[in-house]
Length: 511
Image 1 (spheres, one colour):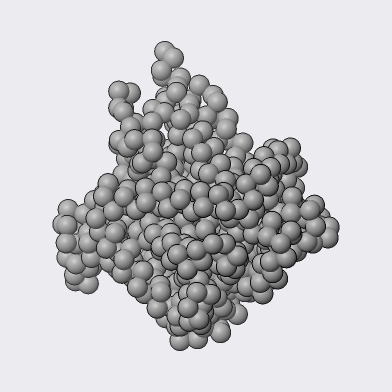
Image 2 (cartoon, helix red, strand yellow):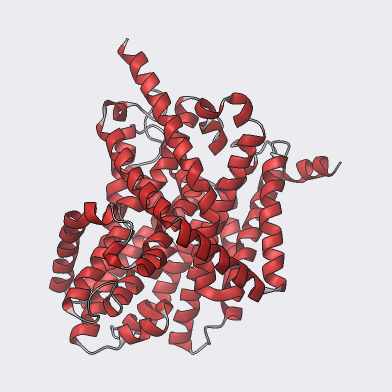
């Protein structure tokens, strides 16, 4: 009876095992955190200490393997296979495709860390002395490493199987359906498959909630800098509540309308902000920094990618690189599903190479524009940006804006950009989670589909608020690592499944 009621409310295609299984994880977490944020913080930190202490090696090895395997697939004859029928053409233009790729895959995180992370490593490098030219150079190399091939290869590991099995093989757009070649149809459509989809949704929730919280903290910091409104947890919660309503509205309009339009808006706003920094910032220094960091990244890529303790600093490795790899894994179920949804009609080679190269390059340019300007001001103009970042990483961007012309206009513009990314990331995730809850199929009842989106949107917003109160940025980072861990094993199964099917198809094509 209860199941019938939920199917009436949320649609007859609702997978009740997946829906209730995920709700059983998310809702108690939200209630527990709301009633006792201190205890949630303590439990989360215990889990984090175990995972980073015992399993950091697995994250480091896995993400490097993902890069290698993706490149091998793209450059092999398998890359010619199309994600769809042989005569299909891409659904979206290259610009729209890139904008949605980038907005879903990086989002608020890039706006938050583009300035903060290089400045943090400049002040407190993992090796050597801080606040030096050597520390500045190392800081950008680290940023390139964290936001480069490893991040996007992690997305490809999920996106490629989903696009291939959905558009070429006609399977439902859920993780479990991609595992039929390795699990068998009975297991993948039974409890085993339901468990996989629950893990995918849970990892998505934790990864997206991290970014929502970061976005709220940064907007709150910007308001404090520009208006004096204190950056408290309560104000961050109000920001999350307001923007939750906005991203639910956007998600209700679907991919081809709200998400596509907002993604194009995001990239446009980023380009405008970049032009401002390049015009009013130290252009020659930024240009030199971009190419120097790119050379350093390429030169040191193999040593960095194969090290289990970067820079002989285990605590730094756990706190930064392992966190990032876990964060990308947490985002992979939703970003992978989303980039699969928008990549129909493209070849595997185009899909992998563009995803691995184009978004990271744009991320590097954006970070050098913002972070490079901040670093130049700190090094050569005695602007106290580094000291401000030491106290709170959220303030880096707005502290930099204080030393540029048109400060109040820039603050408004930057908050608009953060809000737009906030909405795009969250509504993309809400859309994907809703599809996972209905077996990858659109709801047969439009009203029920809208109620599903509203439900999951409220869960994302509610959890972000809980984590803000239970420990701020640290709690958000902890949530992403803990939430992502089980899904890491699913990703290896996805790779085995898609490679097996691609090899089978290639052999059949040769006959």
